[in-house]
Image (cartoon, rainbow, N blue to C red; front, side):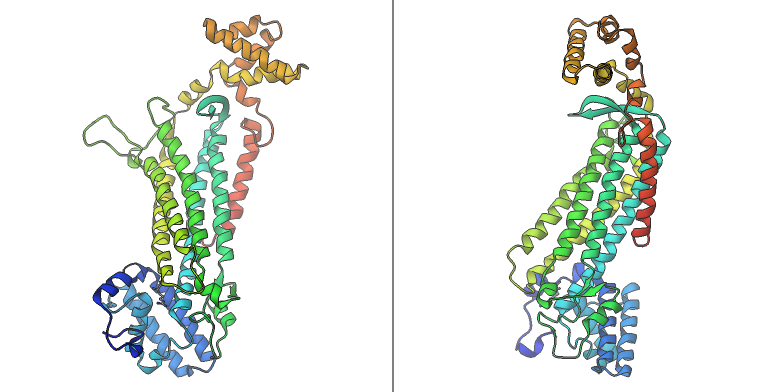
Length: 461
Ligand code: ARG
């Protein structure tokens, strides 16, 4: 068996070593990015006079061929192909002969793998951001459609003050806007090419990392070869961005799950986006919401696993770093499916607004309005709070309707009664960013503008 290092070794590798150390089973996903890196490297070798233009052409043609073979599944992988980089190079050499054997000049798998993985992560973080925009679009559309519908706003999961449904939906959409921001910021920070760093120290050959970086569409080349071949902070950051995004999705999932209960009854799931029970014919289950919530735990695991791998690694490359890929692939696959599923669920769910409004119309929800009404008439807020609190307590203890007690109260009276009418309270939230119709109308506009701006920032969105 021929390895990349057979010259130095008398015997071949043990099968158990290969079984344990191979990464081909998962890193073949980097094939396209590995080939892109190799193309740029070969062009650099030609510019540096290390390969003749003819040799360069032969190798580039072989790379094109390997790309096709990978796409149509005809590239044969061998047991000795430790990883995708080995497999591609072996095949290129078989196709191109001696010029193919020159492809790896001035390069190590350490800068090669870092380059391929940066290309991959950079692109896929943009893809995730694009899917977040789709979900945000759904939330925005549902907010527009919600009009004047309102529901109880909760703190401690206790009814607090009524809020517009649009306001509630957009609360999640704004959180997702920060996720988009984070993904793009990570993308920008990691936009650095490692190619030319070699195994750890650079090269004696006339390589030009800046030109290769430009060829690959990176914003810059590395500043320090030890750093760029050994740090995977860009993967950890991407995993953090995805984990936090997953946590935001999980919070949405939790509410969908709660709202779909008979007890809440605020939301009905479309058949295509819910599941039944194998035993109980009446059931309609919010499995998507639950899986989204469950996957968030897994995404946190992907992040913390990699952080633990990176901790304490001395400079520069260590084989531990091969453990960077699986958590990222996993997080990427899970988050993109979760985004698609949640977007579909939310686009098709029915909001049961009469149930929401009935729940919000309890006169107790307007207690803060009563206190603020007294404040408007000159009373210190603490005093107003105490007065309204006592009226609420009296109503609950003696089972007398709040409206009756408010009408009879010397400081409140008939004029204050209007505040307890269904739908009035929410209209009184008039401050910017608040939950009432006036600020929410402005918010819907502001969010639409933000979405447009983000679409222009996210690649291919
Ligand atoms: N598959 C390896 C990885 O993902 C490639 C680098 C191997 N480098 C080495 N010096 N053994 O990290």
